Length: 455
Ligand code: ADP
Ligand code: ZN
Image (cartoon, rainbow, N blue to C red; front, side, top):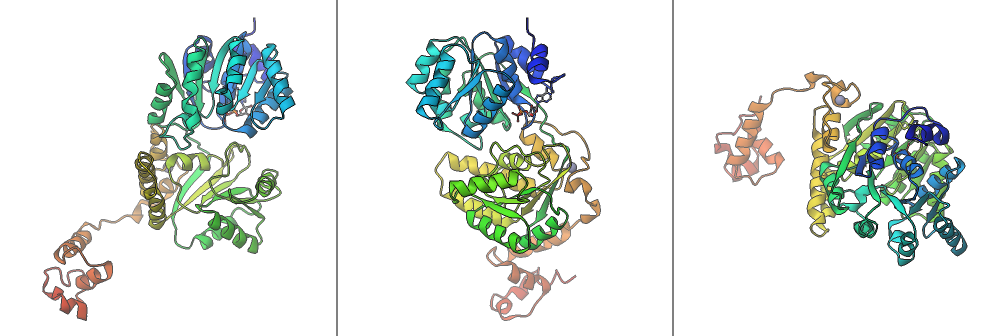
């Protein structure tokens, strides 16, 4: 009788399971619905691939990423595991051949896009078979509270109802407690178990710097990363093009990536980056889904990300090989206002959710405690260490801080007394006891706060 250990060794060639993999597999074998939350690179795929090989029937894997599906199936086939995929990228003949291979029971795993799974053609195919396991990858797509909501994911619960004897797994690399609850509820998990792996990535140095002269700051940063691979995220396509051009003028090997480029150019630029033909990719958030490049040494956020989830996912593309990598976020209050302007154009309830995401992001950026604490607590994890040693706040001198309570009291008092309607420059003039015309005009030299800020 094959066991999880024997399959791990004989098929995948590994001696030991990664953290939580064995527990998850045991849970799935016992046919209990299972929610798996593991950071990218944690080894999620194996947790459904091993059970798939232990069950007699078919395992269906739902994945929204066509490129990833193909990679996974090719890898499995190379290991001698019969697996196929069905999605819109296949020709008629290929599609039929893959359908036949599932129908005959030859394939153990079928990868499908959610919209494909919901078609009558696939329903009737599956009805003629024994479906043992339904694994839903990127399961956060089911939740409106996640960063990548996909309406077709909502209908996956119908698939569950049609095949009640199949055990269901939901897997994701990013899920807040709220998104986790949403996933379990949407999929109708009754007796489910959650497995949460740690999200801490201790090889990443995390830094947030005030955005003053972003280009100069970026160039200075890059001085320390000569010939090393990195990603620079920008908010807009225009910003991507401009920054890529600037870096090219400074003789960096750089490519742009955003949704406004021709498909072929985008693909070429991505390939160049992955194969180390280009050192830097300057991109919008369109870049990165499904990218698994091990030697990314830095990620710069040239603009503010719109949520902690996307930020975490984007910095998570650095240091996949476990070696040190540096993540720099350039933060300005103005960027937050810019995003707020875009959020204002949205409809409820998306608007409220977006505001909450942005608020959490700005609180994070402005915070002065260990970066890992708010980051991990966002994912429901407590980072207990006092000093992580690899973030800006844990490495800065506490001497940076001084008590300015009295000065602030004077300032606010002056704002209040002058009627809360003057700008910073005028309030400063009052505090300094200046004698200009505007002060005279409003008789502000008669205020009790006039001149109390001279020291
Ligand atoms: P995820 O889907 O969580 O991002 P993957 O399933 O792609 O992660 O696995 C990440 C890498 O870890 C892959 O290269 C995989 O082969 C490897 N891996 C998975 N499980 C093990 C294991 N038990 N021992 C060693 N390597 C493993
Ligand atoms: Zn820290």
